[in-house]
Image (cartoon, rainbow, N blue to C red; front, side):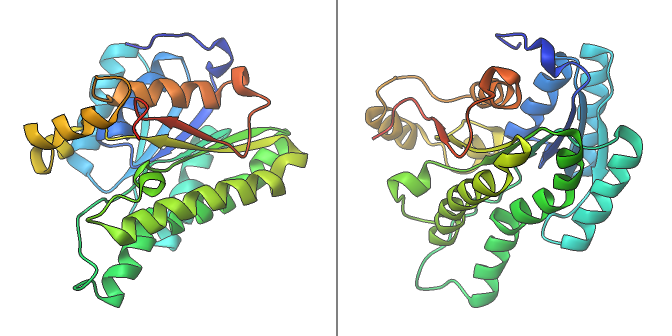
Length: 254
């Protein structure tokens, strides 16, 4: 359930990468509840089709799903062109797709390093490249790049991922400067440890969660809904003078 209504998001064309599950799926639900025209890309066909049915039953609006592997730039361009033929130019782009698989400094190969960059950083540039001309023509747009507070805290256990997430912040600032004259805003939405199903299955042991909460000012875990609510704000005209910024949603973790 969304907590706020943003009337200007009604009929806006939204594209969410990695929208089939987790944080991305919550964004698909929430933007659809606002009356937006939501498209998303994912590699998980089964979960994505189920999400489309769920959202249509919930809102009466069926999101548009296109299968796309974001590590393949050709697929990115093709998927966005396909979506554009149905919805028109993208007005809000949310780069959410990521892979936070754990890895170690002493064993990561060059190919594995490249694979991490190719899912966690490179797509953010090429999706923006693919949608920006349409945003320029409309005279406005919002690009939201999803980072991670792992880059702010320097968390261990996945150095390539942390590096990519740090790079997202720099990319957002560079694009905000470059695109500001066209009234296109670019911001980084930085979640803390969000209790998605993937996290619960793989890493969120009671001990690990307790340790995280001990480092947070707010003693509640961060939910997918918390991140989706912030994305709504950054997409809306409610944040029309916010660009080049990091908006951190992590319960005040230090």
